[in-house]
Image (cartoon, rainbow, N blue to C red; front, top):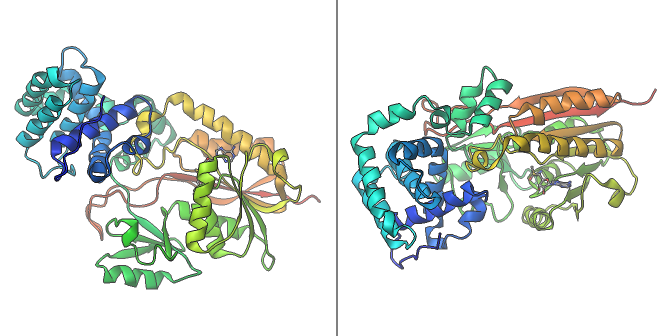
Length: 447
Ligand SMILES: C[S@@+](CC[C@H](N)C(=O)[O-])C[C@H]1O[C@@H](n2cnc3c(N)ncnc32)[C@H](O)[C@@H]1O
């Protein structure tokens, strides 16, 4: 699809729909949404991101409706545009709910008329969207029994969550279709949680304490508007991600300056948290050089220091100096199935086969790093996934392979919370932590 032009005046809904369709098509073709949004002209980006998030949260429903509306499958670019428009028509809590239905149809048709590849199909698009408005109830009833349309996740994903969490699967999938809360981590070296909460309150933003160092905000703010952000007073980090450091600290010997390895560290959220909380010699590794730069930038903003190195954690022979670590954090690469609230594209990008492939990578990393831990030391294993193959099953298999590994108390699988429709903040956001998994594995001392 070629890029629609942007007029110098305020962007129209038609322009935003056209760019949203391009982004959704890119995701359907395997590109991440973050990557696809980088192509959107800056003045349009925030609006297109909101529409793309909304469309991806409704994509199962919308694609099923397109199949009802079009006798033959429309070309993928047109299907993406139909989905972007249908997402605004179907969901009552859409960011574009302020648009009347006839405006959405009119603007989608205009978007089609302005794009050479869609021009010939503008009439067809118009007919389909108008039919949707006439026959909404019947069409929605026709797709209601399709689980992909009902839950807006791929079928394999729904079945896996049902298997892994027989009691909680509905709640997990529901939470995934809502935005998550914005949560901050206070930099204890620079300020206190109370002072940050007060500064937020002065800006008219209520907050509540979560975990040791977190503040969950009543509404999201651009980072530039967070009090003291540029000076390093706080960072944006979900409540679940903030648990890694307390778990690691519990396992460290008191009174010494520990040697700690953060094996998969970029962009450095947990690295920075650890350094805010403890004086430690910290080696932060990541295999991706660009992401390593982000660790350095984040530490610089927060006024913290670590040894940041670009290396493959699964190949210690290439970077380890032979001195054991007192603690290791392995925040392993994973499917990211726990952070779908914040990355609604993830569910459409992953394949079922990715789960086993990533579980093999996690296993290789665990086995490569275990010999680097000192006796009596602690390894915290974390993934931002709700799939048991990347969590509890990984731990069980590890304990069977390593007789010197002792499982210490840990949160296990954390699940995202249901939307808050009655609570303190009452904004229909999913509340509670992201989906995450934590295991604490202590190394037995030789007798
Ligand atoms: C879940 S992210 C880590 C997030 C980070 N701990 C934080 O809190 O900001 C996983 C990271 O693992 C890195 N990674 C993947 N394979 C790796 C390997 N073999 N060695 C080192 N880093 C790896 C990825 O580049 C990615 O940055």
